[in-house]
Length: 115
Length: 115
Image (cartoon, rainbow over all chains, first blue to last red):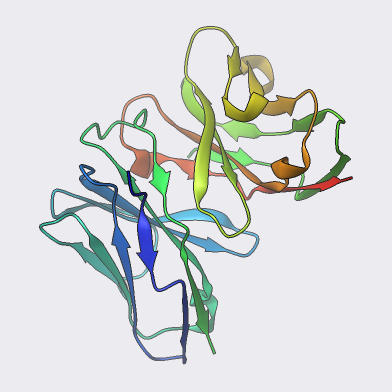
């Protein structure tokens, strides 16, 4: 069984540009979660998509957005990049059980560097 | 609001020595508690979880954690550390009902193992 895959592995952008990160969940998983892991801050919840809809959003500005496609893969878009957006962005997926008990399966992340 | 504190940013232990990683949480009701591990260059992997029953819970890779309600703690332990345990460890707290989007992660403890 293929795990959660994220692309690209690394992304370097300039302040003010837009970044697009992609995530493919485990086959059969319908929920995709996005997290930001900035240095010293742990994982901060960004967005949750399930069945193509945005279900919950963390405390991040609107320039962080995304979508989920019919095949359940997902995109995270970050507009008007700022230096403090530099972080590891992790995607996780879970199955049709949306409860907190349902284990999260994480990808290896996309390292975004904003210069 | 729920919160998680991992007081130790960085811990170094010798291979074969015992390990205890501290986690303190703040939550208004009975929490769901988790420990995840992040190996270098990898996403997070679930080690163990707890929400009821025996307060000592066993996980994968020989890890265990003990829930102490009176101390609001959920410390992770391993009797004998292996070099492959070098990684970052995250404690997380969430509601018994709700989705994984409600999880709050700690800032992590980086474990270094010396030979």
